[in-house]
Length: 186
Image (cartoon, rainbow, N blue to C red; front, top):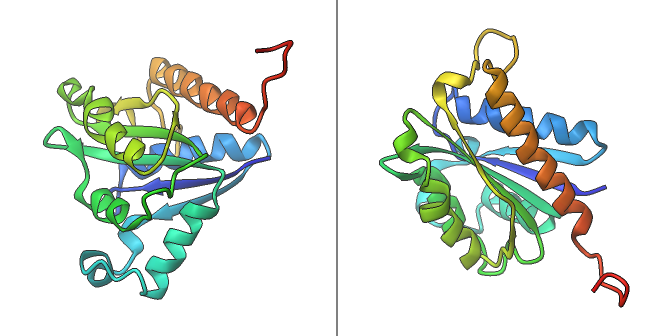
């Protein structure tokens, strides 16, 4: 089974993005994957903003990314782009930090106007960090996420189905990593 790191890039303590990311992480853990969540908002702000990669918490977070087989990157969308918190952290990663990893981008936002932010703002950064196997991401409207009631995180059945299909594609990609094509399959 794979080691999966779920990065949550929301600066909010009561985050719909984090709720969505935990939901997907919990589904993957049920498959037997080793899933860890890294809430970027819990990293020391001075070290993040000062690009202090020697700070123990930052160094440990970078090591988690490098050690993972796969990474789920979850972010709220603000002003048509991913969060500044996520940007600051991604800037601290080595250029090849995502090389050889399967990456799943997840995003949340208040309007469908942000729907393409994954492909136009986040995906290029992930590629620049070496990710070559980025599965199709999922954008979820804030209103479809219930992060406070203790009930289902995804309040809308259609959204639950879409997120499940997205997680299924990620699972399938995890199974393909490292598989060497043979003459029969090539």
